[in-house]
Length: 390
Image (spheres, one colour):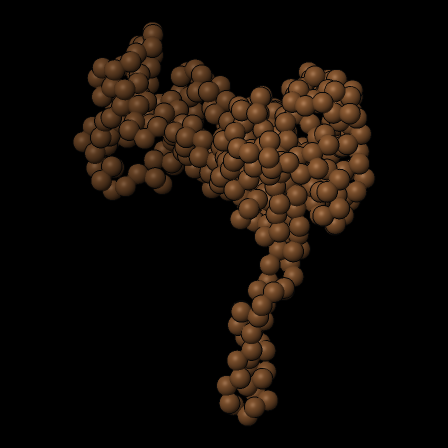
């Protein structure tokens, strides 16, 4: 039956090797989890999942596996050898619970009544106080309550195990999920190069200790510049039109970039890069910066990040006059190549899901222009983009 879990994990594209699966089997043989679905869920996740980004995929796979396992017929469950049940009862029941069982005539009597009731029952029951079923007060069943009963089936009463994985607590960590404020900074942090620059305002503890020792114990305080991320970034944001659907996630990305990169300049464009960009979208008519001035102002060591859905008419990229806002004397692709050739590192972040890119011709054109360095706006995609810029 456990092979169903292995198949479900593979269906979710969760990297589980045969070695890890054998480790889980060894853990089960060592009785680290027995007859408790929550314990099995925790054990399987600890053994099989190597990266927290895959926790949500594991929960989805486990939920699908358990739905299939919960349909195992009661007759199969009842065929478990009685000595197995006895050993487990002796190991897990408290003295109080054993006393409650004795009030029903002892474990032998409880097992006898269970076998008889299972033989008499001909259909499924929900509620009630006699038959084997769910959500009742019979000594036998699932999802109900009886102080000295036998649980039959996958669900316990009052604390349904499925809630553990149905809560989807790790949804935002999934490498394929859309980014949220929780993991923007973590992804952007991949692009770092530290340097000490500026005024000496931070205490240099090793230097202070060394200088004080040289002065024979007389305190000599040394300061040094703060250690900062020295990476320089130009952020170009597509705004308006179809990008209105992605305003919230782009605002969050912009906020995280401002907090992570001290040397950050941002610009706006619509659909594609032409002969100018602008710095204030509210004053886009008066805050224009010609592309030639931008190339003269910023050195080639700046990292370039475009954020846009690349959704437009192909002619907006390939033809003069393709811009929907002004007359561009040369095709947008010519302006873009000039910018690409000036800067050494460039990526394009696309907020549209990866599986939709192939349906838009303009997206394919942009991917060619960025030489394949287009990445999805997901944790995995953004981290890959930062690695490409290093």
